Image 1 (cartoon, rainbow, N blue to C red):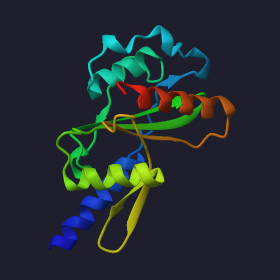
Image 2 (image 1 turned 60 degrees about the vertical axis):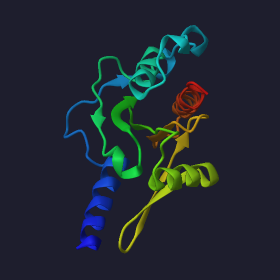
Image 3 (image 1 turned 90 degrees about the vertical axis):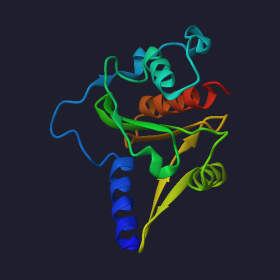
Image 4 (image 1 turned 180 degrees about the vertical axis):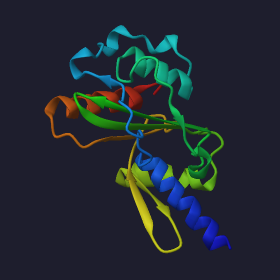
Length: 174
């Protein structure tokens, strides 16, 4: 019974973390790479050190689409205290962004393992009864926020956007 429950949780987590629950054929909101805002012009101190305000900060930088409601993720499975997913386009390429918040003062064993793996390898694994699924991820400098950013575009402007997005998350309340 435990193996079945573990397998079901792993499959659901794999789909949710990878963004496989698609947009259902609806048009995705989009952002343009040339419309970003200089991070020096958006004061981090105006935002609280929590996931909701990190998302507001990323929206102010024009890295996330305006007025987009995220999908709440099964964050507790990885030991996080909050987690959201955004699916949108950047210059006609589908992008999935997942953001998770940890409580660094109160990490459970799952959170400690995942943070340790990301710090060591740049990814973390979710185990099932017969298999494991690996997710490339980034952590903020304070180990409070986890970012999974998926954009399969080879376009230089999309790659730069991913680097800028990652930098903004890494440096949020470092």
